Image 1 (spheres, rainbow, N blue to C red):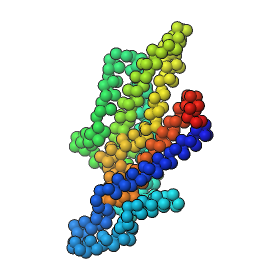
Image 2: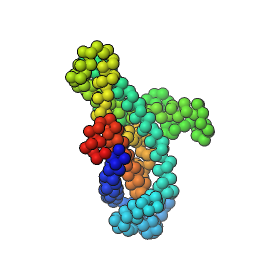
Image 3: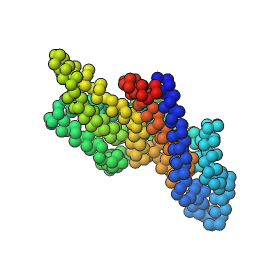
Image 4: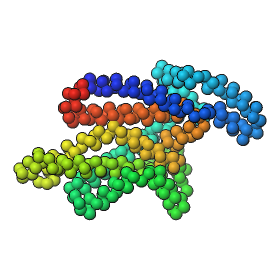
Length: 335
């Protein structure tokens, strides 16, 4: 098993390197940089002339290495990461990129993992419920919910909820994790309830999409498994219907869902990102959009690399789980 894990990690390193090159190049492809943002701010808000603003913008480029070729900028960035763990300096947030990531990534991952837990438990449970009641009204209702969850854009659901909260229910605290009185307070049950009160729309929307996928896949796989010969044999031996489903059919129907875990974390992250942008929560999503808007390239590139790394880590975890469940994966996967 250790060899299996080492092989997966070794194969992931060149993929991550290629992703870093492609990500950095794509981010730098649009014209303009953070110095252009500084120039526009000096002209629009500082009252400077174009020549004065351009001179200061050029001086800023030279000071921060933005005037160097793209290849040199990439080598400096990736070299700092590999040798010193330095992800660069955020020009917009005026702090190291590692600090920006450290502030926003943990809360984003926590939200994504909570969404994943709810989506997995509810989706698998509803999928089993629908499959064991095929063609009933319960199956039709759950299938309709699954269809909506997989087709309705998450940003649209977020906009609808924002409209209902702000314009119909007169909710004013949008765009924060806590109410003002709980911002710096120690953790308590009241503070936790306040946190849930602020983040439930993000959790609900991101969970809905994952729940729909889990439910659809679980229902289809379980229906196929229930028609397998070994299930019919278990029924012929006199086992109860619940025992046949839970002990024999469900474990074998879970294999595709285990593979889905390889992409579920970045999927949940993107779901959280979309809704967090609408709700303006201080997580990864608004940071990516804000840094791209002003040309803060190192923040954008680092966050995109983090999302790529989560996809790779998720696939490694899925491979490990499959190797534990199925000896054939260990045999042919190099374990």
